[in-house]
Image (cartoon, rainbow, N blue to C red):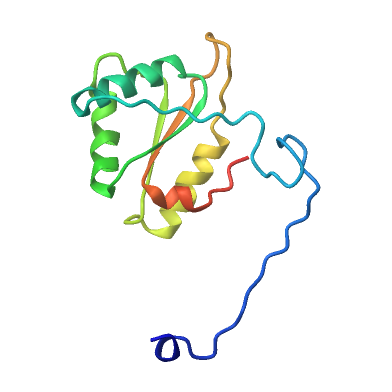
Length: 141
């Protein structure tokens, strides 16, 4: 099987320097120190309510929420602004594999350039609703 599928194989290696970049957690680690990961185990019928509550609590920050399918990303993107309790000033962005590459790049640029703040009286946050396409390596400053 390997002989049939691997013709003209080329070995590719990646060398990573051990010096940490500014704002990262340690030597060789590319994860920003300000990044935090949140998750909640809940009943399926409570997921939407918990998502809205989380978005309310973090409405002045940038948030990425992952969903299983492209259709669900589109559904939640259309549904959230219509629900009571959703922070109306929060910007919503959707990103999935069925979008054209130019639209995905534009959406990512808009999300990364969205201004956020930790003060309640200032700029609203941004929320990127996406599939695992975004988990494959987005470069978000």
